[in-house]
Amino acid sequence: MHQPIESTDIAPGTPLLVSGPEIAAYGFGDPHPFGTDRHEAFMRALRAAGLIDRVAHLQPRRATRDELELFHTAAYVDLVERRSREGRGYLDGGDTPAVPGIYDAACWVVGATLRACEQVLRTGGSAFVPIAGLHHASRASAAGFCVFNDCGIAAEWLRARHGLRRIAYVDIDAHHGDGVHYAFEDDPDLIFADTHEDGRYLYPGTGARTETGRGAAAGTKLNLPLPPGAGDAEFFAAWDEIEAHLDALRPEFILFQCGADSLAGDPITHLRFTEAAHAHAARRLVALARRHAGGRLVATGGGGYNRDNLGRAWSAVVDAFVTAAGDA
Image 1 (cartoon, rainbow, N blue to C red):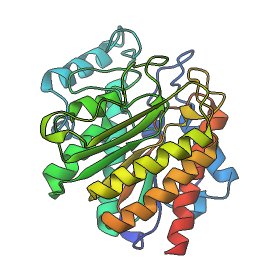
Image 2: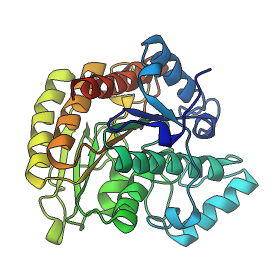
Image 3: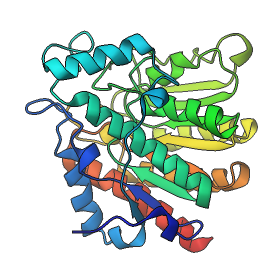
Image 4: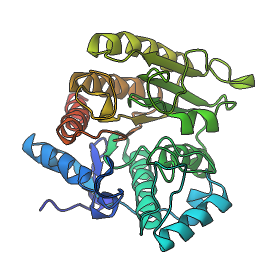
């Protein structure tokens, strides 16, 4: 079995992978689409692609209560902790079960994303966290299989703990990243770019092109809904607009949610991308991060409920990071 290394052994610019059994435990059992087998499906694909020995593999850490509350309300964190102990009911209207231990597993997911951010701040370069990118959770509620919003927490953490200001959040999951969008809708320093299946056809029903931010943040949010059946050609056209948006706003750090449920054959969505879309986005974000953000880029796996698809899409992202590091 591949063994994680210590962060002190990592050379600058080395691509990072943060994974382990603690985040693999995040899931809701059979027959729920978000099962705990997703982590191993990815790791198996990464090994088959010959990529596991080309990244620095770090263990996750557990997020603290204070870190959770950078984004979430104390009352909501209390609710998750209590219902996780009870192990019954739901944390939202019916998508996100309160299975035993989900509080701890969710804390590890958040900590894994923060661990990736910590290391990228130290050594530059890019990092990937497979079981993360839980973009639906709001500040006060779970939603859409997402208990704690590690993306939102990371954005707040980078600003509160490290003094960064302009954080970019880029999302190519089939579902709109509503938990991030609405939490920062009036925040001009959270740069948001999201292409997703049109909300008229898919959960959560949000992310219209007209949603561009409110007040001082008007124009800092870019939503590009795509029709059901859209494939790589439509994605590449949308991507050009995303890249122009990010270039104009010059982020200091990039968070990339690269959900694999936008690939053809996902059981709960209707887009028809191939892994070439994910590879292209990853390559272009590496270049953009080098232009504006000191190379600092953290990618999270997000959704994806066809196990072969998530293995291919996430491995394509890691491969793009490895190739870019070799070209530096």
